[in-house]
Amino acid sequence: MTLAYDLGEMKSESGASLKYEVETLASELALKMSKLLSELPIYQKIEQVLPSDKTIVFFQKSLKTEIYQIARDLCVAKWQKRNKPTSSARELVFTTDQGIFALFRRVWDDQEYLITFKERKSGQSILIAIGRSLLRFLREIKPADRPALSSVNKPVLAVAYAEGLNLERRSDFVWLAKSRIDPGQVLVYFEGADNVTGRPVAENVLDQIEKMGMRWVSLNRGSVARKNAPVWRPGSAKRLELSPSAIRPGNSVDKWIMAKGKELLLAVNYWRAFYQDFNVKINFIIGEGGIDHIPKTIAFAAGQLGLAVGKQRSELFLNVETYFGYHVKDVFFSWTPRSNCYLSPNLNKITTNVVTGYPNDLVFKEILKRSRPVREKLRAKGAAFVIALFDNVFGPQYQFSKEMMEKYYLAFINWALKDESIGIIIKTKKPQFLADLGQVLPALNKLMATGRCFRFNKEIGRLPVDAAAAGDMAVGIGISTAVIESAIAGCRGIHCDLTKFRSHEFYKWGEGRLIFDDVDKLIAALKKYKNNRGDLPDLGDWTKYCDKLDPYRDGRAGERMGSYLRSCLDGLAAGESRAAVLKRANKEYTSQWGADKIIAMENN
Image 1 (cartoon, rainbow, N blue to C red):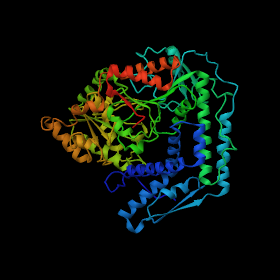
Image 2: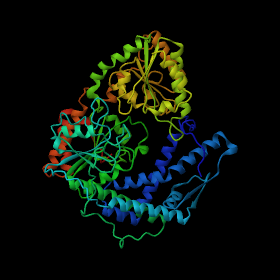
Image 3: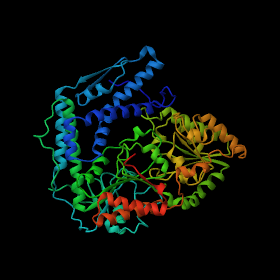
Image 4: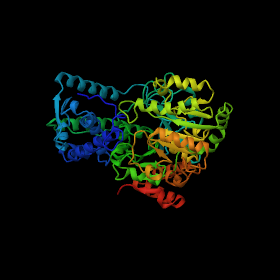
Protein backbone atom coordinates (compact mmCIF):
# COMPACT_ATOMS: atom_id res chain seq x y z
CA MET A 1 0.00 0.00 0.00
CA THR A 2 1.01 3.62 -0.43
CA LEU A 3 -0.38 6.42 1.71
CA ALA A 4 -1.23 9.79 0.16
CA TYR A 5 1.50 12.31 0.87
CA ASP A 6 3.09 15.65 0.06
CA LEU A 7 6.36 15.65 1.94
CA GLY A 8 6.97 19.39 1.55
CA GLU A 9 3.62 20.39 3.03
CA MET A 10 3.75 17.75 5.78
CA LYS A 11 5.96 18.75 8.70
CA SER A 12 7.87 16.64 11.19
CA GLU A 13 7.65 17.33 14.90
CA SER A 14 10.61 19.72 14.53
CA GLY A 15 8.58 21.75 12.02
CA ALA A 16 10.77 20.82 9.03
CA SER A 17 9.54 19.26 5.79
CA LEU A 18 8.76 15.59 6.34
CA LYS A 19 11.13 14.71 3.49
CA TYR A 20 14.10 15.16 5.81
CA GLU A 21 12.61 12.75 8.35
CA VAL A 22 11.97 10.16 5.63
CA GLU A 23 15.56 10.39 4.37
CA THR A 24 16.95 10.06 7.88
CA LEU A 25 14.77 7.08 8.80
CA ALA A 26 15.45 5.23 5.53
CA SER A 27 19.19 5.81 5.94
CA GLU A 28 19.28 4.72 9.59
CA LEU A 29 17.31 1.53 8.86
CA ALA A 30 19.46 0.67 5.83
CA LEU A 31 22.67 1.09 7.84
CA LYS A 32 21.34 -1.10 10.65
CA MET A 33 20.27 -3.76 8.16
CA SER A 34 23.65 -3.64 6.40
CA LYS A 35 25.37 -4.43 9.68
CA LEU A 36 23.32 -7.63 9.98
CA LEU A 37 23.86 -8.39 6.30
CA SER A 38 27.64 -8.04 6.57
CA GLU A 39 27.71 -10.82 9.17
CA LEU A 40 26.09 -13.38 6.86
CA PRO A 41 28.36 -16.00 5.23
CA ILE A 42 26.91 -15.42 1.77
CA TYR A 43 27.82 -11.74 1.89
CA GLN A 44 31.29 -12.52 3.19
CA LYS A 45 31.81 -14.81 0.18
CA ILE A 46 30.98 -11.89 -2.10
CA GLU A 47 33.50 -9.69 -0.31
CA GLN A 48 36.14 -12.35 -0.91
CA VAL A 49 35.60 -11.87 -4.64
CA LEU A 50 35.22 -8.09 -4.32
CA PRO A 51 37.58 -7.16 -1.46
CA SER A 52 36.75 -3.46 -1.46
CA ASP A 53 35.64 -1.38 1.50
CA LYS A 54 33.16 0.20 -0.93
CA THR A 55 31.31 -3.05 -1.63
CA ILE A 56 29.22 -2.65 1.50
CA VAL A 57 28.17 0.83 0.36
CA PHE A 58 26.61 -0.68 -2.77
CA PHE A 59 24.53 -2.97 -0.59
CA GLN A 60 23.65 -0.16 1.81
CA LYS A 61 22.45 1.98 -1.08
CA SER A 62 20.45 -0.96 -2.46
CA LEU A 63 18.90 -1.59 0.94
CA LYS A 64 17.81 2.04 1.22
CA THR A 65 16.17 1.84 -2.20
CA GLU A 66 14.32 -1.34 -1.20
CA ILE A 67 12.92 0.07 2.03
CA TYR A 68 12.41 3.70 1.04
CA GLN A 69 8.67 3.34 0.46
CA ILE A 70 8.30 1.69 3.85
CA ALA A 71 10.20 4.50 5.60
CA ARG A 72 8.15 7.11 3.76
CA ASP A 73 4.81 5.48 4.62
CA LEU A 74 5.85 5.08 8.24
CA CYS A 75 6.67 8.79 8.49
CA VAL A 76 3.41 9.67 6.75
CA ALA A 77 1.44 7.38 9.09
CA LYS A 78 3.03 9.06 12.13
CA TRP A 79 2.23 12.46 10.64
CA GLN A 80 -1.38 11.40 10.18
CA LYS A 81 -1.56 10.24 13.77
CA ARG A 82 -0.32 13.65 14.96
CA ASN A 83 -2.53 15.68 12.66
CA LYS A 84 -5.49 13.45 11.69
CA PRO A 85 -5.90 10.86 14.46
CA THR A 86 -9.16 9.47 13.10
CA SER A 87 -7.60 8.54 9.77
CA SER A 88 -4.19 7.34 10.88
CA ALA A 89 -2.98 3.94 9.74
CA ARG A 90 -2.06 1.30 12.31
CA GLU A 91 -1.13 -1.48 9.89
CA LEU A 92 1.00 -1.01 6.79
CA VAL A 93 0.93 -3.75 4.16
CA PHE A 94 3.59 -3.98 1.46
CA THR A 95 3.53 -6.37 -1.49
CA THR A 96 7.02 -7.73 -2.11
CA ASP A 97 8.89 -10.85 -3.18
CA GLN A 98 10.22 -11.06 0.38
CA GLY A 99 13.88 -10.24 -0.35
CA ILE A 100 15.56 -8.59 2.62
CA PHE A 101 12.46 -7.87 4.66
CA ALA A 102 13.38 -10.53 7.20
CA LEU A 103 16.28 -8.20 8.04
CA PHE A 104 13.91 -5.26 8.24
CA ARG A 105 11.82 -7.01 10.88
CA ARG A 106 14.94 -7.44 13.00
CA VAL A 107 15.77 -3.72 13.04
CA TRP A 108 12.24 -2.30 13.26
CA ASP A 109 11.46 -1.95 16.96
CA ASP A 110 8.50 0.44 16.89
CA GLN A 111 5.60 -1.56 18.35
CA GLU A 112 3.08 1.12 17.44
CA TYR A 113 2.81 0.09 13.80
CA LEU A 114 2.20 -3.39 12.46
CA ILE A 115 4.06 -3.95 9.23
CA THR A 116 2.96 -6.86 7.06
CA PHE A 117 4.77 -8.10 3.97
CA LYS A 118 2.45 -9.75 1.48
CA GLU A 119 4.30 -11.99 -0.95
CA ARG A 120 4.12 -11.04 -4.59
CA LYS A 121 2.56 -13.64 -6.88
CA SER A 122 5.11 -16.15 -8.09
CA GLY A 123 4.35 -15.49 -11.74
CA GLN A 124 5.11 -11.83 -11.25
CA SER A 125 8.41 -12.68 -9.55
CA ILE A 126 9.32 -15.03 -12.40
CA LEU A 127 8.66 -12.32 -14.99
CA ILE A 128 10.85 -9.88 -13.07
CA ALA A 129 13.64 -12.46 -12.81
CA ILE A 130 13.38 -13.24 -16.54
CA GLY A 131 13.54 -9.53 -17.34
CA ARG A 132 16.66 -9.07 -15.24
CA SER A 133 18.34 -12.09 -16.79
CA LEU A 134 17.51 -10.85 -20.30
CA LEU A 135 18.99 -7.45 -19.48
CA ARG A 136 22.19 -9.07 -18.22
CA PHE A 137 22.37 -11.21 -21.36
CA LEU A 138 21.95 -8.23 -23.67
CA ARG A 139 24.69 -6.30 -21.85
CA GLU A 140 27.06 -9.24 -22.21
CA ILE A 141 26.68 -9.46 -26.00
CA LYS A 142 29.87 -8.52 -27.83
CA PRO A 143 28.87 -6.67 -31.06
CA ALA A 144 31.05 -6.36 -34.12
CA ASP A 145 31.38 -2.58 -33.90
CA ARG A 146 33.92 -2.29 -31.07
CA PRO A 147 35.66 1.05 -31.64
CA ALA A 148 39.23 0.81 -32.85
CA LEU A 149 40.86 3.62 -30.88
CA SER A 150 44.61 3.91 -31.01
CA SER A 151 46.28 2.51 -27.92
CA VAL A 152 47.88 4.84 -25.40
CA ASN A 153 50.93 3.71 -23.48
CA LYS A 154 50.62 6.47 -20.94
CA PRO A 155 47.93 6.15 -18.27
CA VAL A 156 44.55 7.49 -19.38
CA LEU A 157 42.22 9.79 -17.48
CA ALA A 158 38.62 8.93 -18.39
CA VAL A 159 35.90 11.55 -17.94
CA ALA A 160 32.20 10.76 -17.73
CA TYR A 161 30.58 13.44 -19.92
CA ALA A 162 27.89 15.17 -17.89
CA GLU A 163 28.22 18.96 -17.70
CA GLY A 164 29.83 19.78 -21.03
CA LEU A 165 32.86 21.58 -22.45
CA ASN A 166 31.85 25.23 -22.07
CA LEU A 167 33.91 26.74 -19.26
CA GLU A 168 31.49 29.67 -18.96
CA ARG A 169 28.89 27.21 -17.66
CA ARG A 170 29.14 24.13 -15.47
CA SER A 171 31.83 22.05 -17.12
CA ASP A 172 33.52 18.67 -16.85
CA PHE A 173 36.87 20.17 -17.87
CA VAL A 174 37.64 23.12 -15.58
CA TRP A 175 40.79 21.24 -14.47
CA LEU A 176 42.36 20.65 -17.91
CA ALA A 177 43.80 23.99 -19.14
CA LYS A 178 46.62 24.45 -16.61
CA SER A 179 47.07 20.83 -15.57
CA ARG A 180 49.88 20.10 -18.07
CA ILE A 181 48.10 16.80 -18.74
CA ASP A 182 48.48 15.69 -22.35
CA PRO A 183 44.95 15.90 -23.90
CA GLY A 184 45.81 12.66 -25.70
CA GLN A 185 45.67 10.97 -22.29
CA VAL A 186 42.06 12.11 -21.77
CA LEU A 187 39.22 9.85 -22.86
CA VAL A 188 35.68 11.26 -22.77
CA TYR A 189 32.98 8.61 -22.52
CA PHE A 190 29.26 8.97 -23.18
CA GLU A 191 26.79 6.81 -21.27
CA GLY A 192 23.58 8.46 -22.42
CA ALA A 193 21.99 11.52 -23.96
CA ASP A 194 23.24 15.05 -23.34
CA ASN A 195 22.05 16.20 -19.90
CA VAL A 196 21.35 19.71 -21.17
CA THR A 197 19.47 19.00 -24.40
CA GLY A 198 18.09 15.54 -23.62
CA ARG A 199 19.20 14.51 -27.10
CA PRO A 200 22.24 12.57 -28.35
CA VAL A 201 25.49 14.50 -27.89
CA ALA A 202 25.79 16.80 -30.89
CA GLU A 203 28.33 16.47 -33.68
CA ASN A 204 29.89 19.86 -32.85
CA VAL A 205 30.67 18.62 -29.31
CA LEU A 206 32.46 15.58 -30.73
CA ASP A 207 34.35 17.84 -33.16
CA GLN A 208 35.44 20.11 -30.31
CA ILE A 209 36.65 17.18 -28.23
CA GLU A 210 38.74 15.99 -31.17
CA LYS A 211 40.13 19.49 -31.83
CA MET A 212 41.19 19.70 -28.21
CA GLY A 213 43.25 16.55 -28.79
CA MET A 214 41.11 14.31 -26.59
CA ARG A 215 39.55 11.02 -27.57
CA TRP A 216 35.96 9.88 -27.01
CA VAL A 217 33.96 6.68 -26.93
CA SER A 218 30.25 5.89 -26.81
CA LEU A 219 29.07 3.22 -24.40
CA ASN A 220 25.44 3.07 -25.54
CA ARG A 221 23.59 3.40 -28.81
CA GLY A 222 21.92 6.76 -29.16
CA SER A 223 24.42 8.54 -26.92
CA VAL A 224 25.97 10.54 -29.77
CA ALA A 225 24.52 12.08 -32.92
CA ARG A 226 27.35 10.95 -35.22
CA LYS A 227 26.08 8.39 -37.69
CA ASN A 228 27.42 4.85 -37.37
CA ALA A 229 29.45 5.77 -34.29
CA PRO A 230 30.81 2.52 -32.84
CA VAL A 231 29.71 1.46 -29.38
CA TRP A 232 32.17 -0.09 -26.97
CA ARG A 233 31.27 -3.35 -25.29
CA PRO A 234 33.46 -5.52 -23.05
CA GLY A 235 35.39 -8.27 -24.80
CA SER A 236 36.54 -11.62 -23.51
CA ALA A 237 38.79 -10.38 -20.71
CA LYS A 238 38.98 -12.51 -17.58
CA ARG A 239 36.13 -11.79 -15.22
CA LEU A 240 35.59 -12.04 -11.53
CA GLU A 241 33.12 -14.82 -10.76
CA LEU A 242 31.05 -16.07 -7.86
CA SER A 243 31.47 -19.82 -7.53
CA PRO A 244 28.03 -21.50 -7.58
CA SER A 245 29.37 -24.40 -5.53
CA ALA A 246 30.76 -22.10 -2.83
CA ILE A 247 27.58 -20.05 -2.46
CA ARG A 248 24.23 -21.76 -2.07
CA PRO A 249 21.43 -19.29 -1.35
CA GLY A 250 19.01 -20.55 1.24
CA ASN A 251 16.40 -18.11 2.49
CA SER A 252 15.02 -14.99 0.84
CA VAL A 253 17.73 -12.80 2.35
CA ASP A 254 20.47 -15.02 0.87
CA LYS A 255 18.77 -14.93 -2.51
CA TRP A 256 18.51 -11.14 -2.43
CA ILE A 257 22.18 -10.80 -1.48
CA MET A 258 23.18 -13.22 -4.24
CA ALA A 259 21.09 -11.37 -6.84
CA LYS A 260 22.60 -8.03 -5.82
CA GLY A 261 26.07 -9.57 -5.74
CA LYS A 262 25.67 -10.78 -9.32
CA GLU A 263 24.36 -7.37 -10.36
CA LEU A 264 27.38 -5.70 -8.79
CA LEU A 265 29.82 -8.19 -10.30
CA LEU A 266 28.33 -7.67 -13.75
CA ALA A 267 28.89 -3.92 -13.46
CA VAL A 268 32.38 -4.26 -11.92
CA ASN A 269 33.48 -6.63 -14.69
CA TYR A 270 32.14 -4.19 -17.27
CA TRP A 271 34.26 -1.33 -15.87
CA ARG A 272 37.30 -3.53 -15.31
CA ALA A 273 37.18 -4.40 -19.02
CA PHE A 274 36.75 -0.72 -19.91
CA TYR A 275 39.76 0.25 -17.81
CA GLN A 276 41.87 -2.51 -19.33
CA ASP A 277 40.87 -1.80 -22.95
CA PHE A 278 41.74 1.91 -22.71
CA ASN A 279 44.48 1.81 -20.07
CA VAL A 280 42.33 3.95 -17.78
CA LYS A 281 44.05 4.77 -14.48
CA ILE A 282 41.78 7.59 -13.32
CA ASN A 283 38.04 7.78 -13.82
CA PHE A 284 36.62 11.27 -13.18
CA ILE A 285 33.00 10.56 -12.28
CA ILE A 286 30.76 13.63 -12.20
CA GLY A 287 27.61 11.89 -11.00
CA GLU A 288 26.56 11.71 -7.37
CA GLY A 289 23.73 10.25 -5.36
CA GLY A 290 22.89 7.31 -7.63
CA ILE A 291 24.17 3.77 -7.44
CA ASP A 292 25.75 3.42 -10.91
CA HIS A 293 28.97 5.21 -9.93
CA ILE A 294 29.75 2.78 -7.11
CA PRO A 295 30.80 -0.18 -9.34
CA LYS A 296 33.08 2.19 -11.26
CA THR A 297 34.99 2.83 -8.04
CA ILE A 298 34.98 -0.80 -6.90
CA ALA A 299 36.39 -1.88 -10.27
CA PHE A 300 39.66 -0.10 -9.45
CA ALA A 301 39.86 -1.67 -6.02
CA ALA A 302 39.20 -5.14 -7.44
CA GLY A 303 42.70 -5.81 -8.78
CA GLN A 304 43.05 -2.63 -10.84
CA LEU A 305 45.72 0.02 -10.36
CA GLY A 306 43.77 3.24 -10.52
CA LEU A 307 41.64 5.86 -8.80
CA ALA A 308 38.03 7.00 -8.96
CA VAL A 309 37.72 10.77 -8.58
CA GLY A 310 34.68 13.00 -8.01
CA LYS A 311 33.84 16.58 -7.13
CA GLN A 312 31.36 18.44 -4.98
CA ARG A 313 28.58 19.79 -7.15
CA SER A 314 26.20 21.26 -4.59
CA GLU A 315 26.10 22.52 -1.02
CA LEU A 316 26.34 19.73 1.57
CA PHE A 317 23.79 20.29 4.32
CA LEU A 318 22.08 17.06 5.38
CA ASN A 319 23.17 14.75 8.20
CA VAL A 320 26.07 12.38 7.59
CA GLU A 321 23.94 9.23 7.42
CA THR A 322 21.79 10.66 4.64
CA TYR A 323 24.82 11.24 2.42
CA PHE A 324 26.09 7.65 2.38
CA GLY A 325 26.46 6.39 -1.16
CA TYR A 326 26.49 9.91 -2.63
CA HIS A 327 30.24 10.37 -3.07
CA VAL A 328 31.78 6.90 -3.22
CA LYS A 329 35.16 7.86 -4.66
CA ASP A 330 38.83 7.43 -3.81
CA VAL A 331 39.48 11.17 -4.17
CA PHE A 332 36.82 13.82 -3.59
CA PHE A 333 37.38 17.47 -4.59
CA SER A 334 35.41 19.65 -2.16
CA TRP A 335 34.81 23.38 -1.83
CA THR A 336 35.78 23.82 1.80
CA PRO A 337 37.17 21.97 4.84
CA ARG A 338 33.66 22.40 6.28
CA SER A 339 32.58 19.60 3.91
CA ASN A 340 34.15 17.14 6.32
CA CYS A 341 31.36 17.88 8.81
CA TYR A 342 28.95 16.24 6.36
CA LEU A 343 31.24 13.41 5.22
CA SER A 344 32.51 12.06 8.55
CA PRO A 345 32.16 9.39 9.76
CA ASN A 346 33.33 8.18 6.39
CA LEU A 347 30.27 6.27 5.17
CA ASN A 348 31.23 6.95 1.53
CA LYS A 349 34.63 5.29 2.03
CA ILE A 350 36.46 8.27 0.52
CA THR A 351 40.22 7.96 0.86
CA THR A 352 41.20 11.62 0.47
CA ASN A 353 39.14 14.80 0.59
CA VAL A 354 41.02 17.49 -1.36
CA VAL A 355 39.82 21.04 -0.71
CA THR A 356 40.07 22.86 -4.04
CA GLY A 357 37.40 25.57 -3.74
CA TYR A 358 34.34 26.11 -5.90
CA PRO A 359 35.22 24.46 -9.26
CA ASN A 360 33.69 27.00 -11.68
CA ASP A 361 35.27 30.14 -10.17
CA LEU A 362 37.53 30.78 -13.16
CA VAL A 363 34.80 32.71 -15.01
CA PHE A 364 33.45 34.79 -12.14
CA LYS A 365 35.15 38.02 -13.22
CA GLU A 366 33.94 37.66 -16.80
CA ILE A 367 30.39 36.89 -15.68
CA LEU A 368 30.35 39.94 -13.43
CA LYS A 369 31.15 42.04 -16.52
CA ARG A 370 28.62 40.44 -18.86
CA SER A 371 25.81 40.79 -16.32
CA ARG A 372 25.73 44.56 -16.80
CA PRO A 373 23.46 44.58 -19.90
CA VAL A 374 20.78 42.60 -18.04
CA ARG A 375 20.91 45.00 -15.12
CA GLU A 376 20.83 48.05 -17.40
CA LYS A 377 17.87 46.65 -19.32
CA LEU A 378 15.85 46.35 -16.11
CA ARG A 379 16.94 49.76 -14.82
CA ALA A 380 15.83 51.32 -18.08
CA LYS A 381 12.32 50.15 -17.22
CA GLY A 382 12.46 51.72 -13.77
CA ALA A 383 13.75 48.80 -11.71
CA ALA A 384 15.95 50.47 -9.08
CA PHE A 385 16.18 47.35 -6.89
CA VAL A 386 16.66 44.00 -8.61
CA ILE A 387 16.21 40.57 -7.04
CA ALA A 388 17.57 37.34 -8.58
CA LEU A 389 15.36 34.34 -7.81
CA PHE A 390 16.45 30.68 -7.75
CA ASP A 391 14.01 27.79 -7.46
CA ASN A 392 14.45 24.04 -7.07
CA VAL A 393 12.84 20.73 -8.01
CA PHE A 394 9.42 20.29 -6.42
CA GLY A 395 6.67 17.70 -6.08
CA PRO A 396 5.01 15.43 -3.49
CA GLN A 397 8.18 13.36 -3.04
CA TYR A 398 10.49 16.33 -2.41
CA GLN A 399 11.01 18.77 0.45
CA PHE A 400 9.63 21.49 -1.83
CA SER A 401 5.92 21.22 -2.62
CA LYS A 402 4.19 22.82 -5.58
CA GLU A 403 2.20 24.98 -3.17
CA MET A 404 5.43 26.10 -1.50
CA MET A 405 7.03 27.02 -4.84
CA GLU A 406 3.97 28.99 -5.94
CA LYS A 407 3.89 30.89 -2.65
CA TYR A 408 7.60 31.68 -3.05
CA TYR A 409 7.30 33.02 -6.59
CA LEU A 410 4.04 34.91 -6.08
CA ALA A 411 5.37 36.73 -3.01
CA PHE A 412 8.10 38.37 -5.10
CA ILE A 413 6.14 38.77 -8.34
CA ASN A 414 3.17 40.41 -6.63
CA TRP A 415 5.53 42.75 -4.78
CA ALA A 416 7.09 43.75 -8.11
CA LEU A 417 3.64 44.29 -9.65
CA LYS A 418 2.73 46.69 -6.84
CA ASP A 419 6.09 48.46 -6.69
CA GLU A 420 7.38 49.67 -10.05
CA SER A 421 10.88 50.16 -8.65
CA ILE A 422 11.33 46.38 -8.23
CA GLY A 423 12.89 44.20 -10.89
CA ILE A 424 13.04 40.40 -10.94
CA ILE A 425 15.58 38.09 -12.59
CA ILE A 426 14.59 34.44 -12.77
CA LYS A 427 17.12 31.66 -13.18
CA THR A 428 15.01 28.52 -12.88
CA LYS A 429 16.68 25.14 -12.42
CA LYS A 430 14.83 23.61 -15.36
CA PRO A 431 12.70 25.37 -17.99
CA GLN A 432 9.59 23.26 -17.38
CA PHE A 433 9.37 24.20 -13.69
CA LEU A 434 7.61 27.53 -14.26
CA ALA A 435 5.30 25.97 -16.84
CA ASP A 436 4.11 23.56 -14.12
CA LEU A 437 3.21 26.40 -11.74
CA GLY A 438 -0.26 27.30 -13.02
CA GLN A 439 -0.96 29.77 -10.21
CA VAL A 440 2.20 31.71 -11.00
CA LEU A 441 2.03 32.07 -14.78
CA PRO A 442 -0.67 34.79 -15.10
CA ALA A 443 1.12 37.09 -12.64
CA LEU A 444 4.51 36.28 -14.18
CA ASN A 445 3.28 37.08 -17.70
CA LYS A 446 1.87 40.37 -16.43
CA LEU A 447 5.22 41.26 -14.86
CA MET A 448 7.14 40.22 -17.98
CA ALA A 449 5.01 42.66 -19.98
CA THR A 450 6.31 45.56 -17.85
CA GLY A 451 9.89 44.86 -18.92
CA ARG A 452 10.97 44.60 -15.26
CA CYS A 453 11.34 40.84 -15.30
CA PHE A 454 14.10 38.94 -17.09
CA ARG A 455 14.24 35.16 -17.55
CA PHE A 456 17.45 33.43 -18.56
CA ASN A 457 17.13 30.82 -21.28
CA LYS A 458 19.20 27.62 -21.60
CA GLU A 459 18.95 27.32 -17.82
CA ILE A 460 20.47 23.86 -17.37
CA GLY A 461 24.17 24.21 -16.66
CA ARG A 462 24.06 27.99 -16.37
CA LEU A 463 25.91 29.34 -13.33
CA PRO A 464 23.72 31.11 -10.72
CA VAL A 465 26.11 34.05 -10.63
CA ASP A 466 24.82 34.98 -14.11
CA ALA A 467 21.64 36.10 -12.39
CA ALA A 468 23.02 37.13 -8.99
CA ALA A 469 25.62 39.48 -10.48
CA ALA A 470 22.90 41.41 -12.32
CA GLY A 471 20.84 41.94 -9.18
CA ASP A 472 21.10 43.71 -5.84
CA MET A 473 20.17 40.57 -3.91
CA ALA A 474 19.94 36.86 -4.74
CA VAL A 475 17.27 34.71 -3.09
CA GLY A 476 17.03 30.94 -3.27
CA ILE A 477 14.47 28.55 -1.86
CA GLY A 478 15.57 26.13 0.87
CA ILE A 479 19.23 25.66 1.73
CA SER A 480 20.15 26.97 -1.70
CA THR A 481 23.31 25.91 -3.50
CA ALA A 482 22.70 28.76 -5.95
CA VAL A 483 22.86 31.31 -3.12
CA ILE A 484 26.10 29.79 -1.79
CA GLU A 485 27.67 29.90 -5.26
CA SER A 486 26.58 33.52 -5.61
CA ALA A 487 28.05 34.39 -2.20
CA ILE A 488 31.36 32.78 -3.16
CA ALA A 489 31.38 35.05 -6.21
CA GLY A 490 30.95 38.08 -3.94
CA CYS A 491 27.21 38.68 -4.36
CA ARG A 492 24.67 39.20 -1.61
CA GLY A 493 22.26 36.30 -1.11
CA ILE A 494 19.56 34.97 1.20
CA HIS A 495 18.12 31.50 1.78
CA CYS A 496 14.32 31.48 1.85
CA ASP A 497 14.04 28.21 3.75
CA LEU A 498 10.35 27.39 3.55
CA THR A 499 11.25 23.77 4.44
CA LYS A 500 12.17 25.12 7.93
CA PHE A 501 15.35 23.05 8.26
CA ARG A 502 16.22 24.98 11.40
CA SER A 503 18.89 22.58 12.63
CA HIS A 504 21.20 23.88 9.90
CA GLU A 505 24.19 25.95 10.98
CA PHE A 506 23.16 28.87 8.73
CA TYR A 507 20.50 29.74 11.28
CA LYS A 508 23.27 30.22 13.84
CA TRP A 509 25.34 32.23 11.38
CA GLY A 510 22.63 34.71 10.50
CA GLU A 511 18.93 34.07 11.06
CA GLY A 512 17.11 37.16 9.86
CA ARG A 513 20.14 38.23 7.80
CA LEU A 514 21.33 35.25 5.73
CA ILE A 515 18.41 32.88 6.13
CA PHE A 516 14.66 33.22 6.75
CA ASP A 517 12.01 30.53 7.17
CA ASP A 518 9.13 32.88 6.31
CA VAL A 519 8.87 34.58 2.92
CA ASP A 520 6.78 37.50 4.25
CA LYS A 521 9.41 38.32 6.89
CA LEU A 522 12.09 38.07 4.21
CA ILE A 523 10.30 40.52 1.93
CA ALA A 524 9.73 42.90 4.85
CA ALA A 525 13.51 42.87 5.47
CA LEU A 526 14.20 43.44 1.77
CA LYS A 527 11.82 46.42 1.72
CA LYS A 528 13.62 47.93 4.68
CA TYR A 529 17.01 47.31 3.06
CA LYS A 530 15.80 48.78 -0.25
CA ASN A 531 14.56 51.97 1.38
CA ASN A 532 17.67 52.47 3.51
CA ARG A 533 20.53 50.03 3.20
CA GLY A 534 22.10 51.41 6.33
CA ASP A 535 19.22 50.02 8.40
CA LEU A 536 20.17 46.41 7.55
CA PRO A 537 23.77 46.56 6.31
CA ASP A 538 24.40 42.83 6.94
CA LEU A 539 21.39 41.57 4.99
CA GLY A 540 22.61 38.93 2.57
CA ASP A 541 26.26 39.78 3.34
CA TRP A 542 28.37 36.60 3.67
CA THR A 543 31.70 38.38 4.11
CA LYS A 544 32.27 37.05 7.64
CA TYR A 545 31.66 33.49 6.50
CA CYS A 546 33.16 33.38 3.00
CA ASP A 547 36.22 31.46 4.18
CA LYS A 548 33.86 28.75 5.40
CA LEU A 549 32.21 28.56 1.98
CA ASP A 550 35.42 28.61 -0.06
CA PRO A 551 38.77 29.45 1.59
CA TYR A 552 40.40 30.47 -1.74
CA ARG A 553 38.03 32.50 -3.96
CA ASP A 554 40.88 33.17 -6.37
CA GLY A 555 39.64 31.69 -9.66
CA ARG A 556 42.14 28.81 -9.45
CA ALA A 557 40.02 25.88 -8.26
CA GLY A 558 40.30 24.14 -11.63
CA GLU A 559 44.06 24.64 -11.61
CA ARG A 560 44.29 22.97 -8.20
CA MET A 561 42.21 20.03 -9.38
CA GLY A 562 44.35 19.66 -12.48
CA SER A 563 47.66 19.72 -10.61
CA TYR A 564 46.44 17.03 -8.22
CA LEU A 565 45.22 14.86 -11.11
CA ARG A 566 48.52 15.28 -12.95
CA SER A 567 50.46 14.22 -9.85
CA CYS A 568 48.32 11.09 -9.58
CA LEU A 569 48.77 10.27 -13.28
CA ASP A 570 52.53 10.65 -12.96
CA GLY A 571 52.63 8.28 -10.00
CA LEU A 572 50.43 5.72 -11.72
CA ALA A 573 52.61 5.93 -14.83
CA ALA A 574 55.62 5.11 -12.65
CA GLY A 575 53.85 2.01 -11.37
CA GLU A 576 53.46 3.27 -7.81
CA SER A 577 50.82 1.73 -5.57
CA ARG A 578 47.56 3.58 -5.01
CA ALA A 579 48.65 4.42 -1.47
CA ALA A 580 52.01 5.75 -2.67
CA VAL A 581 50.37 7.78 -5.42
CA LEU A 582 48.01 9.48 -2.99
CA LYS A 583 50.71 10.04 -0.41
CA ARG A 584 52.90 11.86 -2.91
CA ALA A 585 50.02 13.87 -4.42
CA ASN A 586 48.85 14.86 -0.94
CA LYS A 587 52.33 15.95 0.08
CA GLU A 588 52.75 18.12 -3.01
CA TYR A 589 49.32 19.68 -2.55
CA THR A 590 49.86 20.35 1.15
CA SER A 591 53.19 22.05 0.52
CA GLN A 592 51.53 24.54 -1.82
CA TRP A 593 48.06 25.04 -0.33
CA GLY A 594 48.31 24.13 3.35
CA ALA A 595 47.90 21.10 5.59
CA ASP A 596 44.22 21.84 6.25
CA LYS A 597 43.43 21.44 2.53
CA ILE A 598 44.06 17.67 2.51
CA ILE A 599 41.76 15.64 4.74
CA ALA A 600 42.67 11.97 5.14
CA MET A 601 39.32 10.20 5.42
CA GLU A 602 40.35 6.60 6.03
CA ASN A 603 40.33 6.93 9.80
CA ASN A 604 37.33 9.27 10.02
